[in-house]
Amino acid sequence: MNLNKTSSPAETKNLLEVSHCAWRIRRYALRMGEVQGQGYVGQALGYADVLAVAYGHAMNFRPHEPEWPGRDRFLLSHGHYAIAAYAAMIEAGIIPESELETYGSDDSRLPMSGMATYTPAMEISGGSLGQGLPIAVGMALGLRHQGNSAFVYNSMSDGELDEGSTWEAAMSAAHHGLDNLICLVDINNQQADGPSTKIMGFEPLAEKWASFGWHVQRIDGNHIPSVLNAFDSARSLKDAKPRVILFDTLMGKGVPFLEAREKNHFIRVDPPEWKQALDVLDSNRPEGKK
Amino acid sequence: MTVVTDKKTRLTTSAMIASIASEGQRVQAAPFGKALVEYAANHPEVVGMTADLGKYTDLHLFAQAYPDRFFQMGMAEQLLMGAAGGMAKTGLVPFATTYAVFGTRRAYDFIHQVIAEENLNVKICCALPGLTTGYGPSHQATEDLAMMRAIPGMTVVDPCDALDIEQAVPQIAAHKGPVYMRLLRGNVPLVLDEYNYKFELGKAKMLRDGNEVLVISSGFMTMRTLEVAKELERDHINVAVLHCPTIKPLDEATILAEVRKPGRLVVVAENHSVIGGLGEAVASLLLREGVAPKKYRMLGLPDAFLDAGALPTLHDRYGISTEKMAASIRSWM
Image (spheres, rainbow over the protein chains, first blue to last red):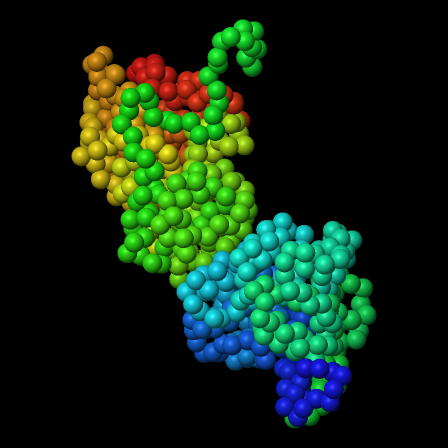
């Protein structure tokens, strides 16, 4: 989608639909956070636009057939983003909305950290950070070997750039020319002990990936037209290269008082604030038909 | 440490790849590679992956036979195990090879989380198990069995010789779930064909009977034990040998039945640290079941960082040479 020209009616419609999709993902995530009184809602709000484009626009999948061999694989390497992924899966019709109430509870299919053995369409058990990209390399090799044209998306956090295994996999993906592999990096500049760039500096990041042999795009991950464009480019590129999209995102995006709150791995949300956050979100609902 | 005083004396060296075959012993070349090539002929789902050690795990034979089914992952063991898991999730059956130290110690979390937690069909086959190189602790995988045993759902195999390996390959390939198998590569001794033996995954097999000593052993220590048994026989000491190549799941019924036969010294012999291997597995089984042998001894490697040096020197130093094993058993009688 080129922003410098007038968008076609179809593009405008798509943009509107994806914006609604992102809004609902944020809403589902906040409701799940309210259930437990905690959760990585800052990350979920920040990453909702990327997930909305992934599930609502880019990926090929069948909601009621999570094992369909032709599906694009979405690997949630940052398992703690499960709250965001569940919200996207509810939006995508993979998980019923009613199950949202069980988030993080005993015997729920929606544990706090994403696990393949618990949740349909959760492709891997993430959480031990730095494992997603190595798995994605094996999956992409395996699919290509079997003539399966599905894409493998590895979704990861900027903190995972610290892990050596990420770069082992990055080198290998380029070596094997994995053009069916798309890596998504959420750069919210926040990891457990503080701002990511202060924990282990990763800049210049685009240049790093490019020098590893990847096709690189770095964009504002909260600007939906740019996100749509980046996914489309990554999918349609003809080069025999793996592709990475680096998304600069804002934790808490969509709820101004959370956006402004002192940044932490866990954004503090006091009990009455869940309702307030939902109210703020509702008052900023995207225009147009739902 | 040896101080070299006479430069004319050629000392035994600590080669990386030292054969465990004794002089004049019958051997077979590359049993793992050959068996895998044969099995894969009718099993297109089998793929080979390695971390820059194809040649040293005999996987190069597979690579030559099926170049499009061989994936070189570079010297990156975490990637190897993670990618093997990813490959298995697409329906393939990867055989992932490297040295045991790198496969287990370096990539442990990837085996645990990516492969085992989802019970994926990855067959991890690792050369240089236990004390089979003189390179020192960087290459001596003396605790690999302990680490792999501790992972839920992991099947662990420690084969004795070329026959064991050749017969194990199709069985571990057909087994549903992750397997860790120790590899002997290159010219591998051939011993078990003399004992009317067949490898069966999950089974321990009696190779010879004897009423004074029962040795339960795995890996090449079974080969050593058979030699020891012959030697002790000359002194009229009768040694039974129970070969237990599957470390997990343990063939508890066979082990219990043998240990229950009264009056025998029971020795567990393994090419592994005495911590967490077959010896402790059998000991805990016996205690749980209230089966007390006359005497119980563990013949394994010490809980220590082992020396570098020539393999025969080290096997002698740590008590797993035939001579030292015989002496230990005599002393325990």
